[in-house]
Image 1 (cartoon, helix red, strand yellow):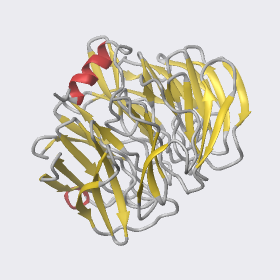
Image 2 (image 1 turned 180 degrees about the horizontal axis):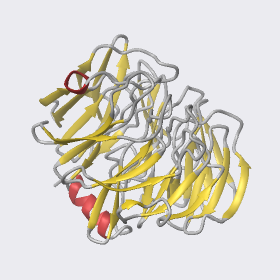
Image 3 (image 1 turned 30 degrees about the vertical axis):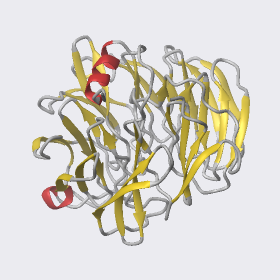
Length: 420
């Protein structure tokens, strides 16, 4: 019997540390923060050793593999179209493919498959960079479809739309933060997961201008007492929204302290316990205490760090916060105080776009050359292994049941043997 994702999230929000991470149901995994409870993960592999199977793919993507039980879901760009693939986890064969949209195009590194799917174990939802949002059951039957750009106007990000949907309880939360190529306001949507209808749409206005309104982040959840907030980071501010109404509960400024015009945000906020870690364009990264009301810029900012990431989203276990920038420079901070535990440690020289995963006492981070560095977690920096697949990688690893799934421009790799 499958355990629905909403039940798992409710337990996570109430008790952050109790669950074994069997599935990887969305971009940042079962706990929404890049942390997995999985153990027995592989440390060393190559293209020929330690690989359970390989599935050829037609193109690269920033989208992460989504894993539930015996199924893996991929958003795939191929030629002019984008489709959803369902993969048999046991052998890497394709169970089914379903078309999502046309209009695929490349904007710098990004194509229209960048948003990651999300699943609750019964259905899967997927958004494309063209604004098509669809729901399918696990047999591939389409449940409903929406065209967000047709309903609410063209997206206006400079580098294309890349945010993934957030699934919480009975709804999907979809953010559109833009401004480079539009004067239309940014907004947040709540969409019913069962039938695709819009429950509410709220505009999100900020003082950001020029390129700074653009954000490629994904919303997350933060709990404070009995209240849960949908956290949206981008366009110079971090905001918390009431899931029931969309009303803005609180707002923290400070992501763009000099009000620069070229300050888009890519790395998403992560939450552990009641602390929100919100990156910007490296300077600063803010640590915020969840909760409050109105402007919490002066009351809830715990600390600032001036060497944050740009593209890779950080990861934390609540004790240490690990930050990796685009150039492969790594910091470890005290997650509660922001004090530097170690700084400016060099991973292999490369460009880093995927986000790190923390699991089994190790940090896994894959660079664009297809090399996954395995770093010891904790206060001492140590690279345990460098595993080279020799193919272009933009996406982040996914972890499930003893295996690591890595997506390249050529293939999906299942690394290691499944525990059950």
